[in-house]
Length: 130
Image (cartoon, rainbow, N blue to C red):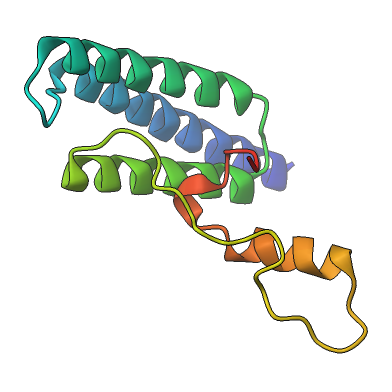
């Protein structure tokens, strides 16, 4: 029973962390100004930030594993810091060709896919391959 109490406290603490992070992202979206200072660009980027936050937070709301929650929080914080630093709300692309990783003798396509997944930066974990 002690384990269940401890586990529920971890989930509850993570819930408050996630909600405060969500509020932070929405506040950033409201106060965001585009680097070009054009009102159209600012509106577009504000809408993108809010919509991206809604989509990703809803997509991950069923996660209960503390490690997965921690990874999602780290990804969100990384995207916030990169966005604020570069004044660009869009995720930075990774330039890795489909078969660009070196393979060892005998490895097939699955090994390439696993290596590509490992090479994906933390701020792009929730984005699908394009």
